[in-house]
Each structure stands twice: as structure tokens, then as C-alpha cells.
Length: 419
Image (cartoon, rainbow, N blue to C red; front, side, top):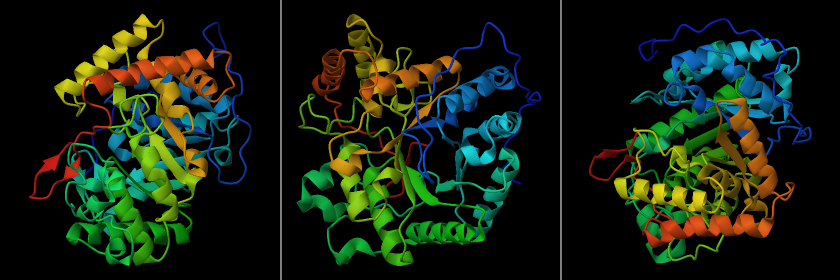
């Protein structure tokens, strides 16, 4: 296919022999019922060349990471063609692990529509993409398929995709219409342009694949919350059925407290939007997924990768936050993971799932430890942990970056940001 990227030469995957380097894994999550995902989802974007070298991906490191997560009870894993060569890495791993973890024991999600810096939401490409993912992942069905990064295709409305505070249309309802989010029927079914038509056609195609049994559930993914909410409502009103899932990223993190909320508040950009996704777009609260509590590496001691879209000021605030965490006897990634994995205020809508990117067994164990601490199952001092989170969040308030999100996708006027 023309959008196919060169594949690395991956060594055949086999189970590593038991040895002293094996890490004991305790089960954290019980077996889930039906289609329910565990609170933590393995983010396999980390199994791509944006985060790891080909030599690492050729080794047994990815297999050990996936096996550790499955043994701990994690029952879902998320990938995408854009995370190349993640799907190619995962297929042989799933095959090798089949005796211990048969296909029905876990949920597998991938994405369609984005291939490198190319977006194609045409029905033919959607079908080709699903077929290619099935082949790469060595499976006969996909539990969830998302339209990837919809803000690069959907029609831009006002400042929805622009840098700034995405919570504005919810905190100030008088400005909601400027984002296409006014309550009532007036804007709920409005198609704002050709981009919206492409999104609707792509979702319609995924719903057809769902009827055919190749896909079990359909969702959309992206960064700008105003655009995700507007399109979720549009799909409900136009196609007469709600999305099954929604995936956002970097919107429920230590730097996501919308101004003027104090750093002691658990409110984040996503926690403000969650009730609207469930009430206005009819997406089940347990089908709202949040990816990257580490903000794609920004909230880690080593800092973000070179391609990260955060501006210099936000990167500097991240470095200062890492110093504050070190001064408290912890590290930024641990604080960030714990915060992103804790249910937020908002009742049922606070029970979202967290997609955490992992590459190694150690990272899996650290993520599981953060989850147990965040959800009251760990041995840590809850008051101390909350104070660590407050101190780190205070950095972003003081530096003027609290609640701020970088621009992503098509802008009014034709400019494209991020990617």
C-alpha cells in the first residue's frame, strides 16, 4: 500500500527461558466481566520507534512487558499504525503468548485514518487499514477501533483546536457557541464543513465493520476536548447512534488544572468534560479513556522527546516540577502516574480508564504500583502522596501553564498545528 512504512527486520519472537532476570508478578486486577476494560490499559505506542530503538524492539523486552501486564491482570492493549512498528511488534508477541493468554483473554484496540503525517478517512482506506491491522496483529477481530487524531480532519470551529484553555466553553457558557458547543438542538447536529462530512463517513464505515463482526466497538481519539465533544454529539445526532468509546490524551495530568482552579482541586480539563460526554453524547462513563498521564514524557525526570509539541515555557515548567519532585524524595513520573490513575471528582463519570505507555517490565511494575497507591490499595501515606501532587501542580500554576494545552489540528484560516 502507498501509506505503508518500511518495516524493521524483527527477530522471531519466542518465550524467553525462565531465569534470574524474571520479575515476580502479582495479580493486581481481578478478571473483568463482559467487555469491561481494566482500569489500566497497556499503551503500546511506546513500542514504536518514537520511543524505542529497533534493537530494543527486536529483543524480548517488549514481550516481557506485555506478559508482565497480562499476568498482573491488565486485559487491554492499545496501538495504532501510526505508532510504527508497534502493530508489527505485537502480532508475534500475542502469538507466542497464546498458550498462557488466549485471544479472548484480552481486549485489543487500534486506530485508523492516520499514517505518519498523512490522514485519510475515506471508506476504502478505513477498510484497507482494518484489514492490514488484523494481519499484523494476527487476529480475526478488533475489540475497539478509533478514528485517529480527528482534529486534523474535522472542520475547525472557532478556537477549539488552538493553544490555550480548552475548559473555556464549559466554565463560561456564554462562549460555548463559539466552539460549536451551545446546549440545545441548534448546534448539536450542525455539520460545519467538508471535514465533518469525512469524519461522519469514516464513522459510518466503522459501524458497518462492526455489523460485519471485524470490529466490536467504535470510537474517536484526539487531543482537543472541545472538538472531541462536538463531534461525539454530532455523530449521535446525525448517525442516530452513540460512539462506543472515546480516547483523549494529556488532558488529565498534573498540568491540566484549568485556571483559576487552585492546585488542591482535583478538577482537570477532562474531568470537566466527562459528564458532557456521558450526558450529551451518550458515551458510557466506563468507556472514556485517558491516555498519557505522563503527558508524552513531559512529566518524567528525563523530560519529553525532541518532537514533543509543548512550547519552551511548558518544558521549563516540567523541568522545575521534576526538581520539586526530587526534593520531596520522589520522582515526577511516579507522581504523574499516580495522579492520572486516580478517579477524579464527578461521580460515575470519574471512573475513566487510563492508558499508560510502557516499554519494559520495570515500567509496567512502576505503573501498577502507582495505580495501587492512587486507589488506596498501596501502603503509602495518602496525605504525603496528595501533598506531593499539590506541590508539583503548584509549579504549573505559578509558571502560568495550569490547564494550558498546545494547539493540535486544523485551525480556522487553514493553518495546521501539531502532528
